[in-house]
Each structure stands twice: as C-alpha cells, then as structure tokens.
Image (tube, rainbow, N blue to C red; front, side):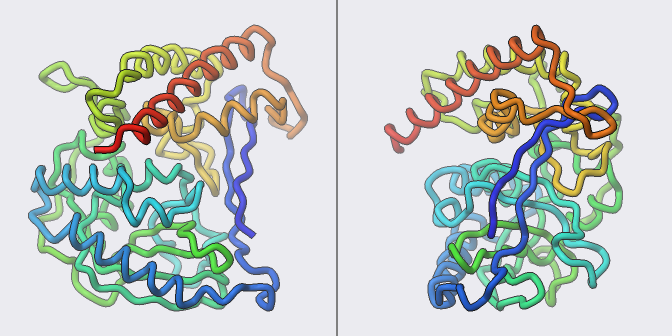
Length: 341
C-alpha cells in the first residue's frame, strides 16, 4: 500500500529529510477493487486535458509554456488525480530494473504539476495497461520536451548531469503510474524509449552548468523564476510578502542545520528517494512533512544510525521559523482556494 514516510537523518553532520513511497500497491491482488474502468476514464480525461492546455508547440514558446504551467498548477483534471505525495524521475536506463530499484524524487502534487509535467507537450495519444511486476497501472502519454526555454523556466539546471539532460531532450513519452486501490497517480517518469518519435523536432543543446542551483540574472531577478512564490501564487495573493520573508528566515535556519548539503538536485548521498528543499516552491511542498519530523523527534541519526537529536537552540530556531512558514503556506493556499479565477 502506498504511504509517505518522512524522517530526518544526520549524515556527516548534515540534516537529512528522507522520503519514501512504498511501491507495493497491491500485496494481495484479491483485495483490489475493480477500478480498471475508472482508471481508463481518468487516463482519457487527463490525456485530453494535457493535449488541450499543453499542446505541441515550439520548444521555445514562452506563451505556450506559461499557459500550460498555470493550467496544471490550478484546479486541473491532472491535479485532481494526483496522490498527496508522488515520485518523479527518468525511467531506469536498465530496462529490467523495477521501480523500487530506480532513483526518484518525491514531490507534492502542485510542485510536480506546475514545475515538472508542464515542461512537456502532449499529443493526446495514450495507452493504459496493468503491469504485473509493479502491481500498478501504467498510462503512457505521447510527449515532447521544451528544451529551448530560458534557464529560469526549469526548476533547477537539469543539464548539471549530461545523461539526464539528454533523456529529457529526447523524451517521447511521459509515464504515469497509478495505484490500483485508489486510482490516483503516484509516480511520474519521462523516457526516450517510447514507441514514437518526440512530439516536436528540436535541436539538442548543452548549456554549461556553473555549479549554482539558484542565481541572479542580468536584470537582477532571482532565478529560477518558476520556483518563486509570485510564480506559484496569484499576484494579488495578500500572503506573498509574508511568504517571502518567512521563507528567507527558514532558509537561513536550514542552512545552519546543513540541510542543503543533502537535499540538492545532484543527490550527493545517492538516496533512492530524494526530497528537495532548496527553493521556495520545493520547500513549500515539503514543509508539513519536515515540521512533523522535527516536532516528533523521529530523527536525526548519526553516521552509525544512532539517534543524535539536534542541538536544542538549533532545533528551536528551526521549529519557530518552519512553523511560521508552514502557517503562511497554508494561508496562501487557503486564500487561493477561496478566491478562484
């Protein structure tokens, strides 16, 4: 059964939030409800929606990307069918490897919809099947990748790893794995090994990674822009200034706890299930889990796996700043829900 498990770990003195989603959707298949028809309908509706709001376009089309992103981040059919926590990543290059053997990153549904799935264009073509080995349903979507967008439109520099960036650029299919017990999407992947050519033709590029996950552009703007609160929430959301201020404080406290030594896109500790906390959008998606783990003293552990609680002053500061940020995230989301477009 799928479930999110969070824990704080200290490895080499660094605070680590490790996330896992069990990928054993149906330990006893006889217990499965018959949701095949529901999943098929959902697959059709999601495929149609994605083709309508994220249709084939030039990989550099900014207007098309912004429309896709805002549509998926809001109340979309896709969002309504995403589980509360999801895993995301490229398909394992070893075709024989299972999902459990594949490194994936955990995200909240708004983050995966608005920052990751929106980077693709969709043809509307899809197929569904039940994969016995994984005990999950699989929806295959015809897709193409927007590789020519400005660097700030990616949630982090995907090109920091040449092989992964190459798969992104050659993607011809997005895979959505569905829990047969709930009919919710629990894992998303991208692959260049689909049956068709990429949705649109594009020229592969290889930007240079300078080692910075965030940066200031020539106009003095913080990048990546897609990870900032004013790109996730509406401009008239009254909680934006408070969110920004409280995130800055939390970021300092997380730096003090050395969280950023581990929760980074290059996955320095090679975690099978990575959780990112390095930008406002990623932190907003994971703050509730982070705070629960800190409050309950479930971790951290030292290098030997023995409990090694945070120093009291550091823990208190992290709880105070994290709690304030958590309150602001909830208030901002509640306001958006109460004031639909």
